[in-house]
Length: 511
Image (cartoon, rainbow, N blue to C red; front, side, top):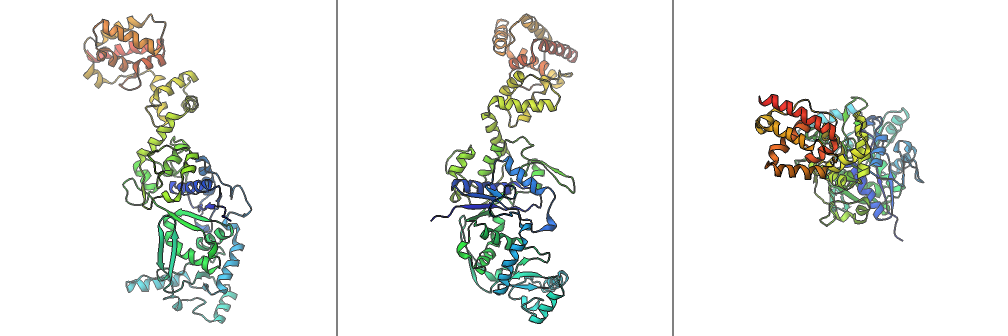
């Protein structure tokens, strides 16, 4: 009987969720949905000293914004609860005792000061210290001490940790679904701490025990965990549950825009793009880091962009709905090499989704932005603005920014443009234009276009002689959509008032 696919996303709430973490969650989600399996959110908070206030809530809300939902987890429950490791400490003790009794783990009483001294001694010899089969018998632990000494130390409540006993010179095989077979000599591994003096396990033990108990079938996680995989393979063997060991898939890194090294917050600060899904305010420093949501990205565009950072569909298609990603996703099409992050490409994705959005949905978003700027505008006018700008921008916020001139009459016109482009007869031509359009009852863009162009032809005038200074008078500079669309949006009275003001400004500037 085929096993039900069960995958998990297991972040540590030690800060905001990086987009690399969101991508890991996304790939797990796509894999689960593709295989009609379950997706679990587990919070790995065993490192209590590094926990950051609000980080857990941030992780949950960020994934919800991206449309990544869970079947079980810390916030939705499930039959394998609790899903927070700090609430599972009693469970782990059973497995620690199993490892100790089988001789696969041991107590270590070395103090941090003692270990620092040993490290310094090794440094003097220009060697690197590692707590392993070669050094453990010279250190203070239950392997080097007598049973009586160990018993006495424990009875005196002497602080200790429990370390895994890595076998000497054993080949460990990790079968990775992305990278193939990885073989590692156990002599390269150190005796990692499995259980800390604070009564909580380290990531390594908790991760393996929880994956085993929660019947996880596939562990899809970042490349940075690949060096830990041999230890995890050993722990499954030591706990007599190797037959239930999940399949591993270690995802490639998301690289800096330059391509050298892992993408970090510093890269985002340097190049001016977010590396977090939502805005994050550090509870200690109060520093605010930008997020994709607040930067104006649609969640669908954000997800589409992330999905293609390390995976490809095997086609030329680049725009995918979530349902399409689920249908096409496979681990076999995940790349081994890192994926270079392209900030401009991420904007392109948002632009594509903006263009496909229903105009009324965009208008509602634009109206909200106008309201925040105390700009009063009708829905009909905002909808026309959206229609004019949607092909020109990457974000809704750019429509609001680029259309502000419609609500504020220009006080000054660009004098450099006046000096370069306006002639001695420019004001006279604009006055003639006013006389031509003054009596119009129809102020629609199409009618204005037809009528003004006919007037230009009949007077043997070029568009540059009139339309350029007309735009300058209406906007204050040479930007914006078609002049006829600007005239319609401004309305007849405001348009004429701006042209008259422009005439006076140009006249004074060229005298």
